[in-house]
Length: 380
Image (cartoon, rainbow, N blue to C red):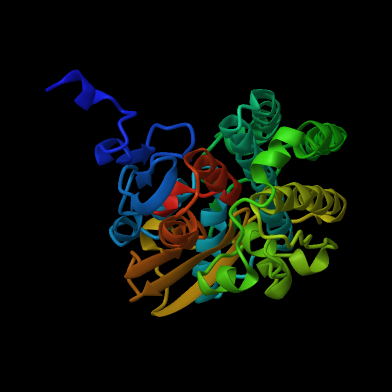
């Protein structure tokens, strides 16, 4: 082959104009072990093929082969950055089908765990934007502050990432002495950090130039394609399960649902920043209002734990949107069927095939991180 035939600048050679490019599974522009196969024309995306299946798989089928309570050690892995939503959603479904009343103290503890996990997930997601735009100081800041939350979880549950702390009827153990004081200290620290985040990240001209106007999603498209959570609210749709269909003790707490409404990448990441402040407000109320009492209702022995025949769909509001469990029981010691409705599935596998077309390659990781997808949700 002649040397001129290897010249990538040769206009007539379409092999250098059209090519395939992989984003993931080890590319820093993707979240987790997941991949997009992009058909490129120069610097622009012409076609998108999601390539799931690169992470642990088959949770829904595995749950049919395990005892009801054994599944609590399995399901947190369906969303690694925010595992607790799986535990709570699953327990809410089982408790409804069994007619179990959860003590008020346990409900408050669950809200505390959910909102702490929510903040940790927001910090992790916003830091990803810093990584993909070369804003590495923000990565160090946010991941470092997230570690304080992991310290609290380790003290409470024994685990930093997977907690396996929820149990039908309540939680496995009560709050340790002094834990709420430590939580309050952390909230004081985090609130002092927020103005620094705003100035250094959200008011940063580089971040704004890379995100403002990028990847616009209209309210109609968001609804039609099943988007939920901050991605939906960033497009102007005011829907949050904690307000629309309150569960646990959210109806006893005072908090707002921010709405940015511009529908672009900047709105999506700003939406998470604003909701982070509301989570702090919720946690402070829980610290003041949590009642005394037991942390769990007694339930049958795990090996004799049977859920009456029937089905139920339980859902919670995660940092990414609606996380739901459709549970079917035939009265046995194991579930007959469990289906998980994750918020990343619709935007990451389906909507991405339309949204990324026409986008420049350098903007693809920015779009991915501002939608804050969770790849284990694809492979469940």
